[in-house]
Image 1 (cartoon, one colour):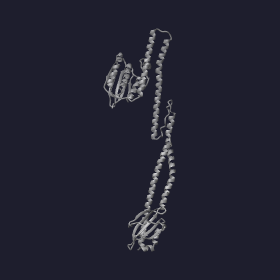
Image 2 (cartoon, helix red, strand yellow):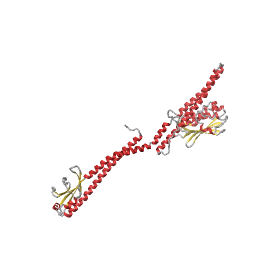
Image 3 (cartoon, helix red, strand yellow):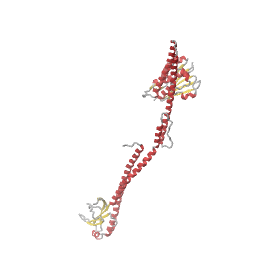
Image 4 (cartoon, one colour):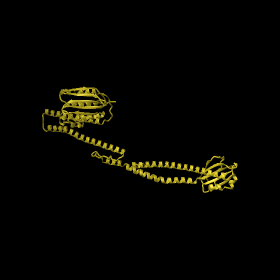
Length: 463
C-alpha cells in the first residue's frame, strides 16, 4: 500500500536513498580496506624476505649451513605467528631443506620455475584462510641457488573484514531509522505552511473570501505559492462582489419596467375604457417590452463575449472600411440631430469583424445620443509603434472625472433617469470593454465637462 501523506513519502524516499548511499559507501570502504590490507601484506612480506636474504648472506655459505645453523633464520620468524619460512634446494625435483613457523603442517605448492625477482602467489590453507606466499631464488656464497618461500597467514585480515561487515550490517538499520525519522521530522515541519494553506482553504466560501495566507518567514517557493493563493482569493473576491453587484443591478433594472408594465395593466383594467385608450396602453407596454428584449439580448451577447465557448478565428480587418460601414448605418440618426460623422485615417487590425463593428457602433451611438446638435462626430484612425487606435470624439456636455473609473461597469449610468428615457440599458460600454479584452486590447476615455469626449479602442499591432 502506497503512503498518502507527502511527509511519509518524502521520509521513505530519503530513507531509501540513504540506504543505497550507505551500501555504496560501505562497499567502497570494504574494497578500500581490503586493498590496503593486500598492500600492507605484500609490503610486510617484501621487508621480511629482505631480512631473510640478508641473514643468509651473512651466516650461510652452503645449503648444509642452513640446515646446521637455522637459529639466525628462526630469529627472523620468532614473534610472527602468522609467518612460515620454507627453504628448498636447487635440485630437480626440489627438496625441502628447512621449514620454520607455527603451521608446519601446511603443504605449500612448489613453484615450477624460480626467479631472482620477488614474486607473489595466493593460496588457500587447510582451514579455509587466505595465504599469501612470496618466493625468490637466492644465490649463496658457493654459487648454489636456493628457493626461499615466505608465507603469510591472513587469518587476522579476514577476521578484520568480517568484523567490519558484521558491524556495518548491525549499525545500518539503526542509522537508516535515524535518518528516516529526521527526514520525516524535517519534511513535516517544512510542510507546515501547506497545512496553513489547507486551513485557509477550508474557511474560504463564497460568502467570506477575506482570509489570506501569511507570507512572511516562508521559503521562496512557498512564499510564491502564498502570494499566488492570496492574489487568487483577491481576484475571486472582486469577481464575487462584481457578480453580486451585477445581480443587484440586474434586479433593479428589471424591476422598474416590470413594475411599469404591471402598474399600467392594473390601472387600465381597473375600469372600462374606450378602445383607443387600450391601444395607447398596449403601445406603451410594447415599447417597455422592446426595451426589456434589448436588455436581455445585450446581456446574452455580453455573456458570450466574456466567456466564449470556443476560440475565435481572427482575420485581418480594415478599420476604415468597418468605421465607414457603421457611420453609414447611423447617418439617419446623425441627420435628425443635424450632426455629421467624419472618418479620418487608415489602420488595420486582427480580429472578429462582427464584434469590432459592434464595439464601434456602441461608441458611435453614444456619441450621437450625447453630442451637441450641429457638431460633428469624428472617427480618427491612427497606427502607432506598438498599437492601433480608433478614437470616437464628440462635443457635448462631457463626463465628470468621478464617473470615468466606473463608466464601463455593467448598468452604470452617469444620469440614470435620462438614459432610461433615451432607451439605454447601461450595457453598451461594458460590451465594448469585453470585446476589447477578447482582442487583447483595451478601451479608454477622456472627457471634460462641456467640452470634447473621446472614447478610444486600442488594439495591439497585428503580427
